[in-house]
Amino acid sequence: MKTADEIAEMIIKSGITTKLDILYPLLCAGDKLIGKNHRAEPDAQMARQLVLLLVQLQKPPQDRDLRGFLLTTQEFVKYCRAPEIA
Image (cartoon, rainbow, N blue to C red; front, side, top):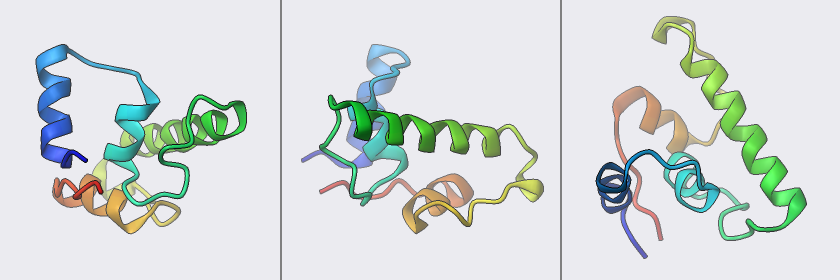
């Protein structure tokens, strides 16, 4: 498995991606949906989580409410700490 830094480097080299199998593990490390993409229900749930995260990221940092996200996601957003992806 790759680390979040390795995945981020891949994204930078290849340009911006919208692939759930890349973005979701990076932004939601440790979530139970990781690895279950390419099926309608998990894909919809992952897309929903990413949209909710994007809504929060549109707000100024002091106005963001990240409590509904995994701790790994909160740390990634607040402190730019890329999680290890197993």
